Each structure stands twice: as C-alpha cells, then as structure tokens.
Length: 387
Image (cartoon, rainbow, N blue to C red; front, side):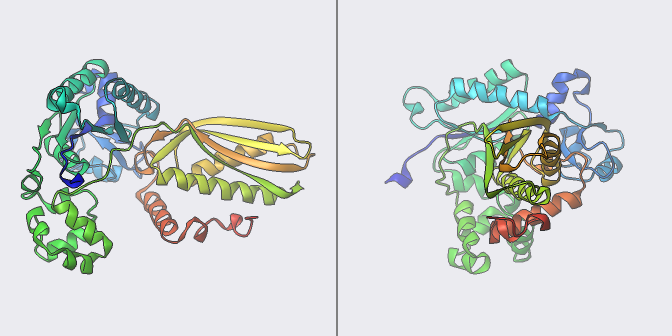
C-alpha cells in the first residue's frame, strides 16, 4: 500500500541563521551573547545566539526585556540583504545537489531523497551535503532524516545546534513518545495550555487519546493533531520554484483624474497583495508602480526598500511613487502595483523597529481576513472602490 511505502525525508535548518551570518562578517562575535533585532527599546528580538538563549532570551521577545535578561548582550539591528544573499547561496547548493527539495523559509529546507537509497545511503549523502554547506558558506546546519516532514523537523529541533540524527522507519512513535507536546509543530499556546490542564503533557499521552475525543475537543484540528502525535504525515515535499514577483493592476471603467479615487484604489491593491505576501511567508525588496494614461502611454517607477510585507511600509512607498510619477494634466486609464525581489520571511523577523503591539495587530488582521475573506477588513479609504 502507498501509506506503508518508506520515504526518506530530510529537514535542514541553518542554526541561528541571522546570528551565524553576523558572526561570519565579524568573527569577534563568535561565542558572545548576540541579539539581532530592533535598535530601539520598543522593538523585538528577531534572532539570538545560543549564548543569549541561556539567559532566557528568545525570538519575538521585546528588546527592553532582552536587555534586562542579558545586559551584557551585543545588539545588532541586522541586514536582511546579507541574510538573503546567504539564503540564496544555500539554495543554489541544494539545486546543484538534490533532485527534489522544498524551501520552507529563509533558513529551512526539506529534501525528498526517496529512491536514492537504492544507489547509495541517504544518511551518507546528507552528511556529505551538510559538510558541503559548511565548507562553501561557512554556516553551521543541523538536520534530521526520517520518513516524513513532521518527524524530520522535530528531530532536527532536538539536535540543534550543529547536530544530525536519523529516525529509522517504524520508530516514529517511539521517537515522539517522551517529548513534550509543545515540540509538535502547530500546537499553539492556548491548545497546549488546554491539554496540560487535562493532564496531557507528553506526546505519548496525546497519541493515546481517541481521535473522536480530540475532534470533539478541537474540531478538525484535533484530527490533524492526533495524526501528528502518532507520527503520521503524508504531506509531500513541494518542488522549489522561485517566484520572481507578485502584482495586480486595475483598469478603470472611465478614465479619471480623481486623485482621491486613485489613492483609494492604490491602497486597496497594495493591501491585497501585501496580504498575499504574508500568506506565502514572503517579503519584498522592491516596489514598482505603473500608470497608463488615456493615450495609452505607460510609465513605471520603482523603489528598493528594506525587505518587508507590512501594509504601512508598502502603502507609504506605493503612494510616494504615485505622487512622484503622476502627471496631473492627464487622465489615467490603469494603475498597477508590483512587488519583486521576493525572499522567504515574515513580519516577525522583519519589522526591526516595530512593537509587539504592531506585530499582534497584523496577526489579528490576517486572522480575520483568512477566516472571512480579505474584503471583510480593509482601510476605510479603500472601502467601496472596487469596480
């Protein structure tokens, strides 16, 4: 049967990626408590070294709290351009070495090595690949090799930093059994608290709960959680294809010089594709505005920005480009907006100067849009403008 077919899935995770890149740029930072994040006290931690983690510092923590926990830490604002460059280097190594891989984030990869064991050992192959990455990039990487994506990711997390592990086929449940339920990807804070109040603290106990009970307790998510607790994950490794850009444009029903109307359309379009970026866990480094006039003359103007997918940053950039490009003497037929220079990432690791309140606001907005549709919640200036 297909379900019993043995797969070989590896999960590669670059250890403390941002910190590792900073240490490559400045070797004096190695072994020091290093925190990458906002330079102001209201910012958040985007990454931290293992030396800083010993003091309780972790990602998404307010910078002010991180300073109190680790007063001797070295704080660096971070350079996403550099991080993207090294991420592309690792991606190129994967493309040259692996027949099928998925880039799940800027510093994580899944490799499908199924069938390669017929010709040589998968464990030997990925061990040599790990050494190649270290040799060509200077970046440490950990990996887990297992029968599916879930087990390989959990295994990698168990051996970081700079570790490697193989979970034999058939040993998935035994591997997960003693782990805390918080080690299972997808278990949120509220769900974990609910399960702990029920006395469910290990994956073994979770796996023994009847699936019907978990479904009654958590809905469809309970079914998925039961499968994870039993080490079942049939999700495929999605072949990596780099998306170059994301864009949208609007041809008006009637040519216009109404600046208020055009600003509203621009806000609506920018919000829409910014939300799409966040759904795809991507950031843009370049914004391009297109204007087509009634005589069909088409002009574009672009601006490079610090990588982001936040509405307030992208909207300001788009409106600034419009104000500089628009010739107020001419009727406008079409407006377009494009985000390019895309890289994996999300706003939690990008808004260096933003507060936790801002991050929570975006999370709440996106949660509403995913549940009810992106038109359910939008800025007032864009309401009622859709043709």
